[in-house]
Structure formats: structure tokens, C-alpha cells
Length: 145
Image (cartoon, rainbow, N blue to C red; front, side):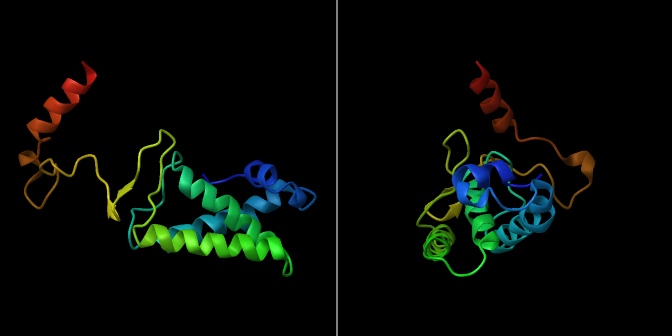
């Protein structure tokens, strides 16, 4: 899985569509775009990101264009500048990543977890002693009703 595909890049930047074969783009660019994005965010997030992360998909499209653009063009430089500024805002907690359903992955720069208020299921003890927090079970049951 890659965060973006050739069609995503081509749709946003049609001028690049005259370029290489999509299979070549996948093996020559997209996997390296994913690796770069994972490297940029690995210190603050668990990577790889899920396929419903719209922010990372958006960044992947722009980074693919930046990497594929040969030479210096004014458009490439502007996109690169916006890309770098956005990376900084996310890492500094000034912007949150968003999932496809609109939920934020970060809140005030802190990594958001849907299970942070529950006792962890795993630890250093014997596995026979591990169980899901009863509060979490009740909350999930209530959410279904």
C-alpha cells in the first residue's frame, strides 16, 4: 500500500500526466515518498499511517510532484515551500492530521488515542493476567446501543 497513487498525483497536477508509466512511478517514486513521510513523522506518530489518513495522502501527492518535477520551476518551489511549512505546523502541534471521517489524529500537538483512558491490555506480567479494561468494554457496548 502506498499513501497516494499515480491517479491522485495526475488528477492534482495534470501537467505531469505526460510523464512516465504509472508502474515506473510506483517503484521509482511512491514507495520512496512513503518512506520519507514515515521518516519525517516517526518521532511523533506510529508509522505507517492508515489508509484513511487524508493529511498524509495529501502530503504524499505533493511530495510525489516535488520529487518528479525536474529542474526548478516556480510552481515546484511554491509547492515545496508549502509542503515544508505544513510539515513544521503538524510537528509543532499547530495543525492536526485528519482522518477521512474528519476526526483529528492530534489534539493540541499531543497524539490522540481512543484508548488512553483505559488500563492497557498488555504488559510485563504473565499473559493469563491480561484482560481488556471493563470500563472500555462498557463504553464500547454503550456506543453500539
